[in-house]
Image 1: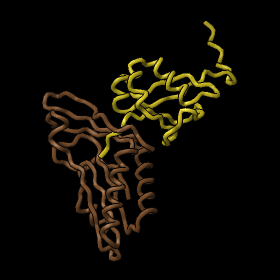
Image 2: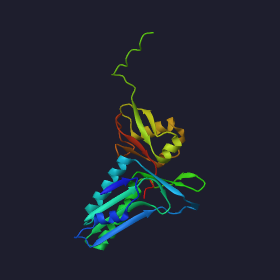
Image 3: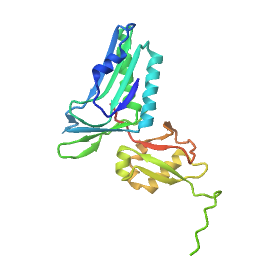
Image 4: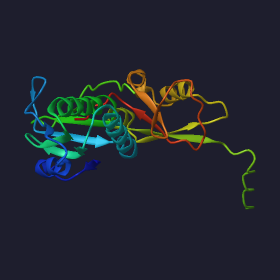
Length: 140
Length: 94
């Protein structure tokens, strides 16, 4: 499954969603808001997405991962809106029969998400200064 | 005062809407731009047209991809007036 949400991410629910009796390994990645962006303190990160295309790209990443690894279930969830330090921005959970595949598939999914999904984040400093993070030129 | 005659439907002035996101929207000061469209318009020509209409975007645009109907598009792609076009600045999800 894949989703964009404005609600806090329940990582326990995301993990439970992918568990399968056929899978002995579950890998979970969480991206969280750090308190530093470069040298500056971060108070908030604000995420926005080109919704329909982001959903499409998440679906493609899911399909790519399923084609390459023996996946029981995979979940990719990205949160949008204003997030404070420590909050979860993204969760990727994958179940596979064995751990090597689970780790690899999870790593692939988050790496691919970060290079191709049209989502952007803006750093908000204690001064109120806002700056879009430099980002990665998309690699389709 | 007589009413204006209706536009002749076979000679409309065609435009294509380009959606702007994130840094592109902030630099442009708008979340969309309407640009002239004619048969044969390519993504590359659209980039040039956008940079002319909104010079504030000229520096960022080369680092952006263009999406057409939710797919990344090559510069040579031909555009229809009804295509959904978006400027995709460098992404920073996750």
